[in-house]
Image (cartoon, rainbow, N blue to C red; front, side, top):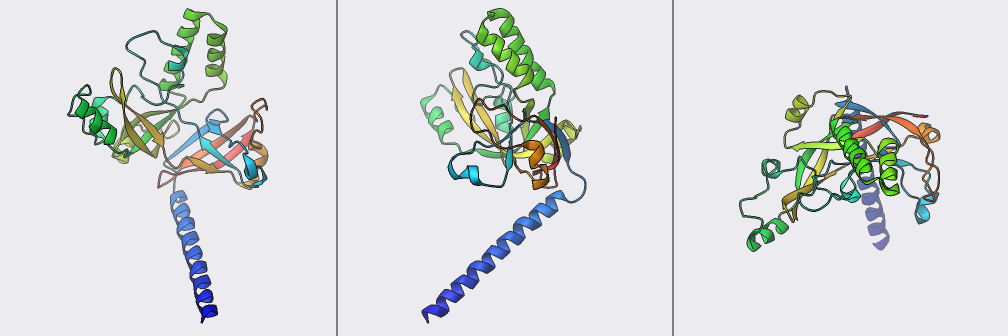
Length: 266
């Protein structure tokens, strides 16, 4: 009897695994069917290799994560610091204002300086939304201009390094808008070689000068096919390792999920 139960459980486990794999593969096939919703040309600046912690260094698989930045809202009081520039701060994009947060479904009816309002904001859960990603567009140029102005004003080694990083190392892929209707966003951001639309989440966050928020792109990890491993390289083991330079073509499909369509070393 016990042997029969074990056999039944094993068979059920195998059937569940097969069904799960079928759903995953079917979803991936559907996502990649037809013309992509968008295709972006990215580099090592906009994608990140994982750091090989522990047994992960023995993993033959390889993945990249899209490095999505935001143009931060600058502080309205006090001096601007290097931390405030170049997307170094944690969240609070300048376009995520009260109007946009309300459109995304957040209740901002209570004043932020009211203790009950603060508690209400802290309890509000993140909202699912569609995010618009822009590659090397107005947001990146604005970020670069901020760092250029800071470096000219401060004239310090730290500012000079920040400017060099912004010009040649930091990513140029920025989240520039969010909404609840993907088709409406695509109509507004029609250039499919410069704008991609992905799934994301939006959080509320209280700041000293008002209510803000921050965003997160969801499902932006790319599995690197074996044929592209030579172009992309391996994860860095040390911060001092020289990163591999490469270009990748990332397509976004019917379900707005990305995959790597091509890759080449540069």
